[in-house]
Image (cartoon, rainbow, N blue to C red; front, top):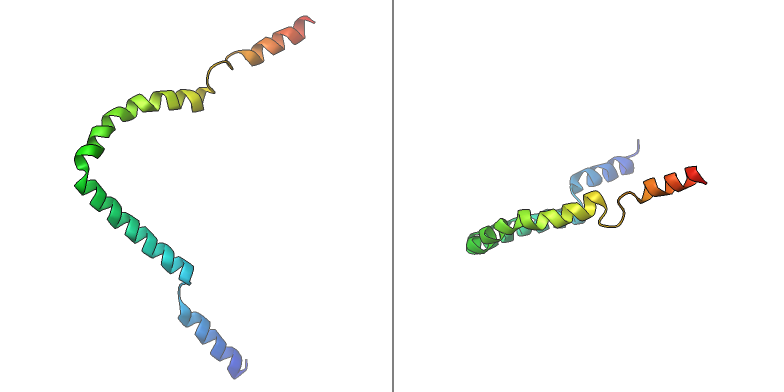
Length: 85
């Protein structure tokens, strides 16, 4: 190993985290602090909206878990028509 290879290895090892990862840590910290401050200042509004979450969850669960209206049994009807023909 030459002296130049060894010197370059020390520089790369001393750099640590990249600029992008440092920026991501700063962004996460900022968002955590902003979220905590917003929650403490607007606690009454946030807790007041929690009452509506179960009611809003019902149509969302129906759409995403059951596939919405109009699709119930359509696959079975196609199979029955194919058997009779």
